Each structure stands twice: as structure tokens, then as C-alpha cells.
Amino acid sequence: MIEVEVKAKIDNFEDMRKKLNDLGAIKTKEEFQEDIYFNSPIVDFAKTDEALRIRTTKQGDEKHIFITYKGAKIDSESKTREEIEFGIEDSKKCAKTFEHIGFKKVRTVRKNREYYAYKNFEISLDDIEGLDPYMEIEIGLEDGNDYKESQNSIFEVFKQLGITDGFERTSYLELLETL
Image (cartoon, rainbow, N blue to C red; front, side, top):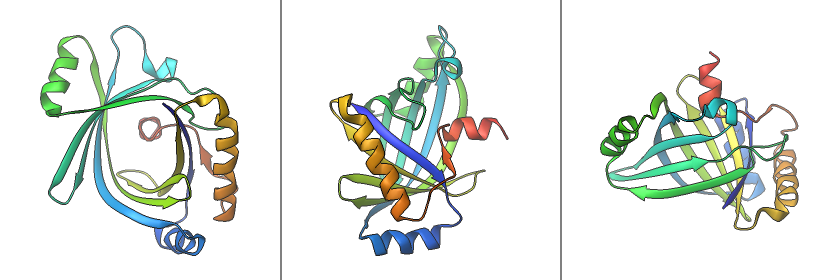
């Protein structure tokens, strides 16, 4: 799957919640996410612009764990890239396995995320430990050939929400690493 994603820094969550409501976006869920990022023993993901993580999500008593690989970004305007994700049962065993075969833990990123649905977009408000407030808008495509059209439609939604600058191509991991 190709993930077409654009992220922007926002002033605050309350104003954005009101703007999302006025736009007609529907809040679908809230969850806590903990992402443990790893670097490859073969290539430096920071240089190749790839990512490998174990994500644990918690929503009330419900917990889910996923491994996610994200390929290099395919354009200079967004975070559009291939994404492969699948569920696992035990994050500690997975992390230990990664480390045994040479992967190194880079950092853990923790955030509270609110999800909104609007048309075919998934919108999230992200409260990341150590960073300012951010909002992401994304569309998942099975066939990435039309990603430019999707990307343009994402920028149009940002414009409708009053956001025309502050866009960020770097990941939360990269932003935290620069502090």
C-alpha cells in the first residue's frame, strides 16, 4: 500500500477540533501509541529515509501491536511512501528478536492521537511527548500511480482548515532527534 500523508504543526488542539467539526469531520477514536524504532544493521535508515517500528496502541483496555516498515519517501512535498504493516502478539519478544539479528533500538516515540474521518481522509491530532501539537491527514492507496491527485486533495483539506504553511516532511522520530 502507498500511504499519502501530509503533516503540519498546529497552534492548538481546541481550535482545530472546532474547525474539524465545522468541516464535517467525525471523531472516530482516541488512543495512546508507543512506537519503538529500530535501525538496520545493513543500511542506515536515517540515510535511506526508511523506518521500522513496533507500535503498541492502547484504547481503554484494548491493546494492539503492529510491526510497520515504511519505505523511502517518493516525493519532495509530502511523506508519501510504501507502508507494510501487520499485527503481532508480543512486542518484547519481537524487539528482542530484532536486536538478536542486529537491529538497534533508536528511540521510543509516545503520543496521544485523536482520529477523525472526513470523506476518504483519515485525520489525526497528535500530542507527542516532547513536541508541539501536530495534525496529519492521510489517504491509503493500493495503487500509488495516482498519489499526486490524493496529495493535492490533502493540501486542499488543510487549506479549508486554514493551514497553508508549517508542513513537515520529517517524522516525529526525526523531529525528536533534532532536539
